[in-house]
Image 1: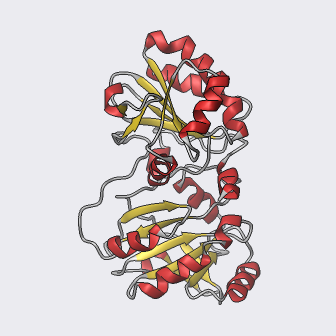
Image 2 (image 1 turned 90 degrees about the vertical axis):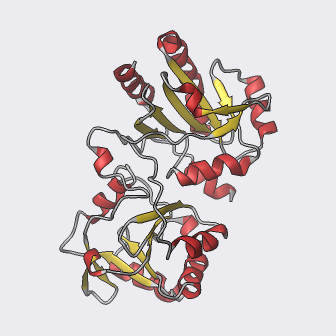
Length: 323
């Protein structure tokens, strides 16, 4: 699990999703998958639009993805335990021969699709669904899609709990709660401040907010925090709020780090380490630090994943668009 968290700790600026245009390509719950062409391991061309009237678990994987190798058994169980659910493993990073080799060695009991020669830009399209650059590293993620073609849930990093989620949601006809993405209202949530007092995002309406997912175990997070703190200091009197959301560690460990490295902005915590992890996965987090920028109207303006040269300058530019 520690290795998974370190992979999520993005050392470079990988994701720059914005509301101006990118919102139309980022896909979350409530959206439909655009049509695309892929091919089977036997080389047969197949279109997404050929998949009709059945729920689908669309799983994105690659040989280089270390976490994927720990999840194949879970994906196979989804296929075996849910008759009527079509499980498709889509690989757009490896050659057909490599994908076929892995499928044979692992004994996959689900379909595998790969990039078709007639659709060379498929990887670029799929990465855009996550708001990522094409050369970003592939981590395991999946969409559970209802028989009506609408995405019901998004999953990033799988645990045993996914088995029950898929069992409950795959054949459900209940309305879908739209997922978080640029251009949509940021979902309200409640966490705790350092004293244990309950805090809700709706209390920040009217301010420009940066929600910063971080962990003291993440080197880029630690490097970013002083600059983020300085950004907050420059614009707090103009309506900027920065809220650090501690991710994937105990509150005690985080507070110990903050005592040695004090910040001027608020930091919120879950009741336990799992609470903020659930928000991260539900909203489609792909790496940390993850900064979600919310406008005064409560709508997501954009997000940025990772920290590197020019990151704070870009964040400041976006904040100034909203202040």
